Image 1 (cartoon, rainbow, N blue to C red):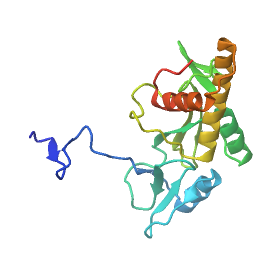
Image 2 (cartoon, rainbow, N blue to C red; image 1 turned 135 degrees about the vertical axis):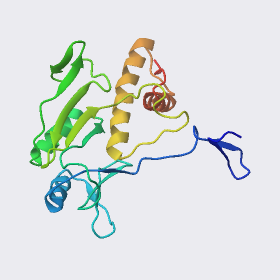
Image 3 (cartoon, helix red, strand yellow; image 1 turned 90 degrees about the horizontal axis):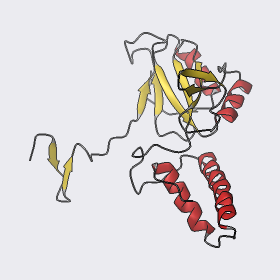
Image 4 (tube, rainbow, N blue to C red; image 1 turned 90 degrees about the vertical axis):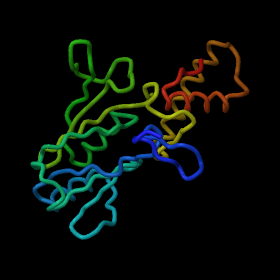
Amino acid sequence: MSKTDVRGGGTGETTVQNVDMKIEVAVIPVSDVERAKEFYRRLGWRLDQTPVGIVQLTPHGSGCSVQFGANLTSAAPGSASQYVIVNDLETTRNVLLAAGVEVGGIFHLGPDGPLDGPDPERRSYFSRASFSDPDGNQWLLQEVTTRLPGRIEGGVTSFGSVDDLTSALERASAAHGEHEKRTGAEDPNWANWYAAYMVSEQSGAELPR
């Protein structure tokens, strides 16, 4: 066995390539803990129970949380830069604006740099907007609906919230409508088609047509 391998308790060999490691927390450097807590609560993030001196909040549908506190990090307040993915950037931006959060305009990545407005083809990863907390920590909102190949492990399909599942069903419904137009007939196995589409979309595999 190499130094990077460990033996997995009689159930087979475990290597660094297949050990489960899930990112749990991102630490955000802030100068005023109460001000930061108020701001992130305004985003609708859940305030979790934590030891004294640590504030932890979790976005709806997220498996990763953020923490801040007086002695958690030596990084300069405002030096963090993080990504948050959403399935509908325009709706998310409007909701945040209504909650009093200053969000920049939507832009997308063009061949020569950023361009105003969402991606015309609404491709995953291309449409973005940004905001910052009171200390200047930057957050980039990125619209992701279809994962690049290999980003989700095969056989693993999950949805972090009812909104995520609803959005996936709506995209599958629209795509299935185009499928029936191409075939010229109603599809009695629409449920199987929906399921195949949603799994393929999340894993980055080729979408059914």
